[in-house]
Image (cartoon, rainbow, N blue to C red):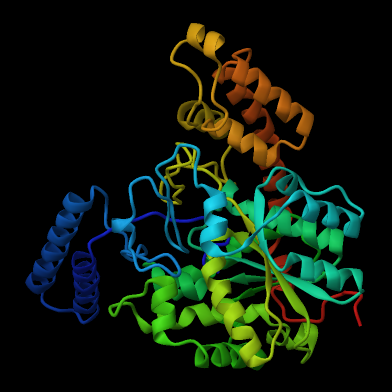
Length: 475
């Protein structure tokens, strides 16, 4: 699915962006048709010239997967018009000018979701009999839609299932990509429910410059990383859109039902599609919506349409599911519930983005212990002072320090985290010491993940991706 874990940032004047896209198509078709070399060269020259103009105008490279000016749901402004100090979030773009990152309280108001408060966390604890996950305790999963309804059902022994996903755009996943999966595994364990994981390789083919074969091969590689998180094979079905849609009439029927109930104006309003976007992009949201309905998986739930779905994902994916929740009652299905996470910051700071193409913007699951150490020491944005003396006197700023932010995600011990916060803020702990603490947490975490991934064979992936009955206890 449009990645459940991260946002991409971009801006661009529309005409220039569209000209580049059209020129790129022309170059590809000339090459495919073996056109004369001088004709191809001339078209390529034109393409490069357009990209140069774009970079000069925008101060950044043109990216095919960054549609210009995606309006935020319900607003008619584009990011270019967004005030410099305002946050902007949609499924492709996450932008903030604050070193602290996005203002999530404002986002809850903008998106119309509900805050995950102490009361809800206590209720989850009571229902599961388990200590809440650190992502809940620390507000990393911070917003929800209808979670109380899911808990009502669970307490009344009524079923629900989990759905999350990954848009496989590169072979290696980074730490940020793991966040929804770590939390989804915890939910699967404590509620003992089935899980479906969508690999939206079709989406990545439509948005990025990939072949279908590449997109599918990324699905298989990313599935290995996901399986290495420890999901229960008896309760988990991972599927590739490219593969599964052709095998499951139930899934495709739901896609078509959703498509019939969403107008072109609606998807333009929600996702900011333009007249020059390919029709695949315009129809894709229905594909991401379909797994929210239990009868999309006849092998798992047979033809039952009454089983509610709970979707843990990053908040930038919410527009897809606002659309889904709008359509659900009109096609006779329950609305999916959601749990939203904050964004995982890039090493360079919460106002920059992580990019699979920039190896230094994040810690990748393929990184060695040495690479992790080097990246944290060299690139992790520091909230420390310019000199040791100043730092000892005035202390560091945990709100902007990336090493501290990463520890809130990955250090399990609450008391130790609080002690680090106090020591760094008071100046008792120096930036180098904070970075060393993070390195000591990340190196074993990544090494253990790599060891588990090594155990995942092609055969294991195949088993997880075979449509089949899953084991669960509800009638």
